[in-house]
Length: 152
Ligand code: RB5
Image (tube, rainbow, N blue to C red; front, side, top):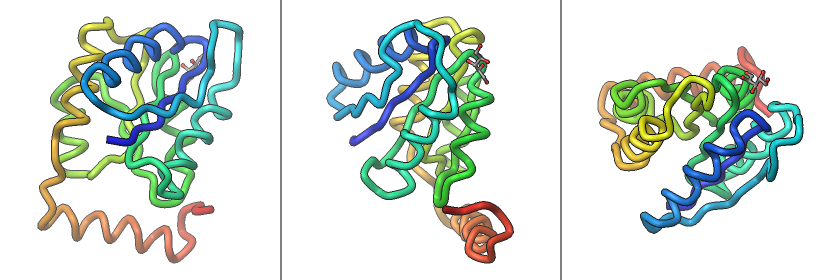
């Protein structure tokens, strides 16, 4: 799978671990930074990654900051992005099955590395259930099309 990944300073170490895990398991990774622990602003990296998903250059995106909260808030501003903030394997799997999430946000200050990698693995491997869930996704999309939510 073609995946963009990004983080702020708080997420840098975990981003490196997630990136290695994904490369080792055969995925193509586009690293949008940040590339060290110097203080940065999470909206810059969330926007870069979410834009690649919104515009179709990447199939999925993964964002890591201290809590994952800021990253998810920003990513969901972009058209066609459904970012899920997940702190468990179960929510990561359900965000794929029910919400067809295309961006995963996780918190480096919240999760141990092993759990973070398990969440990433579940999120990458779980398929969207479709059916009634597809109809609900279409309702989200129609809100976006009406301009009820910010889109571009
Ligand atoms: C940075 O200190 C922190 O605010 C950021 O990583 C993130 O948790 C924001 O939501």
